[in-house]
Every structure is written in structure tokens, then in C-alpha cells.
Image (cartoon, rainbow, N blue to C red; front, side, top):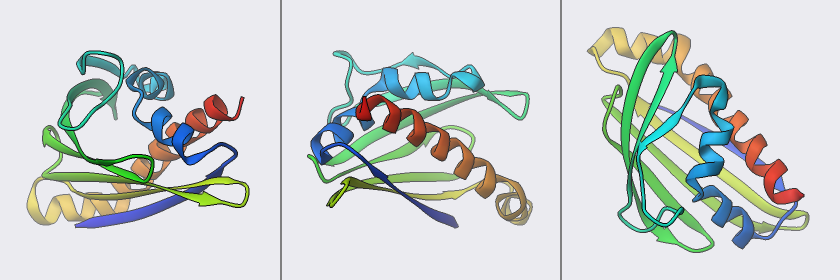
Length: 149
């Protein structure tokens, strides 16, 4: 399995950053470049324990659907989302939030595996890790701008 960790300090409280991270509308805003929309999502405008969401987007010119489940919500410290149906063999995103002298240290740990065995492993090393890092970095930038206003 491939894995990477991103960290970013955001000038806002852990509670504010945590709440923004559970906002589906903010996620859609951050992925507008890829035409990502929520095909099916949680009622009430925020993810809660056990929420599922299906995202529709276009990556590498190919349309994708990915359904994830949100779980292990521990406000304002941590939550996870995991693909339950979609293009990856496995995909897990752990979101962590720690108090920091300048606000909140937000940590994203992504563990994933593409399908197709050894070919997928090569694709993960050569393409997917860098691509996913850019996506999550872009998402985090939009999130930071939103909560730092």
C-alpha cells in the first residue's frame, strides 16, 4: 500500500478546522477544478458518524464515482473516511487536528492501493501518490482560506 502524510498549520481553532473538514459543500468547492460533485450525500449539510457520500468527478479525463463512509469521529481531534466503492482497491483518509501555537496543526494521512496488482503498484509510485498529494493540498488550501477569514 502507498501512503503519504501532509501537515498544515491553519490560523483557526481546532473546532473550526474540524467542522470545516466535515463540510461537503467546502469539499465540492475545493475540487471544482475536477468538476467534482456530490451525487449522493448526507442530509443536513455535514458529515456525521456513519455518513456515506458518493462523489462524481473526472480525473485523467476519465469519469469516476467514489463512495466513502465517514467514521471514528472524535471532535475536534480526528475522523476517518474510507472508500467503500470506487476506483481504488483500498483508500483510507485519516484527518487529525492538534492545537498549535498559531492555531491548528491539520494532518492528513492517506493510505491507498490502486487495482491491477503489480501494475497498480507501479502506477501508485509513479503517478497516483503525487496526484493525490496535489488534490489534498488543493483541498487544504481552500479549507484554510475559508476558516482563516
